[in-house]
Length: 50
Image 1: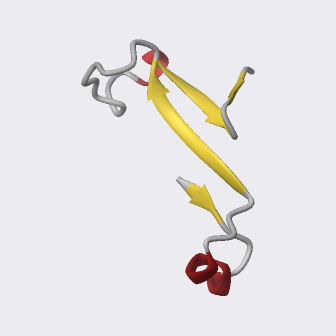
Image 2: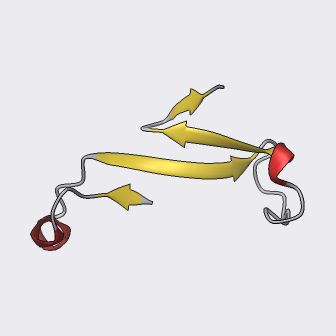
Image 3: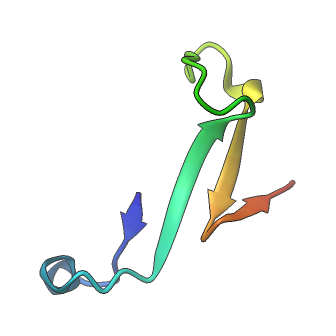
Protein backbone atom coordinates (compact mmCIF):
# COMPACT_ATOMS: atom_id res chain seq x y z
CA UNK A 1 0.00 0.00 0.00
CA UNK A 2 1.36 3.42 -0.90
CA UNK A 3 0.59 6.24 1.55
CA UNK A 4 -0.03 9.81 0.38
CA UNK A 5 -0.47 12.99 2.39
CA UNK A 6 -2.89 14.61 -0.01
CA UNK A 7 -5.40 13.28 -2.53
CA UNK A 8 -3.72 15.35 -5.27
CA UNK A 9 -0.41 13.52 -4.67
CA UNK A 10 -1.94 10.25 -5.83
CA UNK A 11 -2.00 11.51 -9.40
CA UNK A 12 1.63 12.71 -9.22
CA UNK A 13 2.87 9.44 -7.69
CA UNK A 14 4.59 11.22 -4.76
CA UNK A 15 3.94 8.74 -1.92
CA UNK A 16 5.44 9.36 1.53
CA UNK A 17 5.78 5.68 2.48
CA UNK A 18 4.98 2.12 1.51
CA UNK A 19 3.34 -0.31 3.94
CA UNK A 20 3.24 -4.10 3.52
CA UNK A 21 1.62 -6.76 5.69
CA UNK A 22 2.94 -10.02 4.34
CA UNK A 23 3.27 -13.65 5.48
CA UNK A 24 6.48 -14.90 7.09
CA UNK A 25 6.87 -17.43 4.27
CA UNK A 26 6.67 -15.25 1.17
CA UNK A 27 4.58 -16.71 -1.63
CA UNK A 28 2.32 -18.73 0.67
CA UNK A 29 -1.43 -18.12 0.60
CA UNK A 30 -2.54 -17.50 4.19
CA UNK A 31 -5.76 -16.15 5.64
CA UNK A 32 -4.86 -12.88 7.42
CA UNK A 33 -8.18 -12.77 9.29
CA UNK A 34 -7.78 -16.18 10.94
CA UNK A 35 -3.96 -16.31 11.11
CA UNK A 36 -2.65 -12.77 11.79
CA UNK A 37 0.28 -14.08 13.85
CA UNK A 38 2.04 -15.43 10.74
CA UNK A 39 2.19 -12.00 9.09
CA UNK A 40 4.82 -9.27 9.50
CA UNK A 41 4.46 -5.50 9.10
CA UNK A 42 6.95 -3.61 6.93
CA UNK A 43 7.21 0.14 6.43
CA UNK A 44 9.46 1.27 3.59
CA UNK A 45 11.00 -2.21 3.48
CA UNK A 46 11.95 -2.35 7.17
CA UNK A 47 10.22 -4.78 9.52
CA UNK A 48 8.28 -3.19 12.37
CA UNK A 49 8.56 -5.11 15.63
CA UNK A 50 6.45 -4.53 18.74
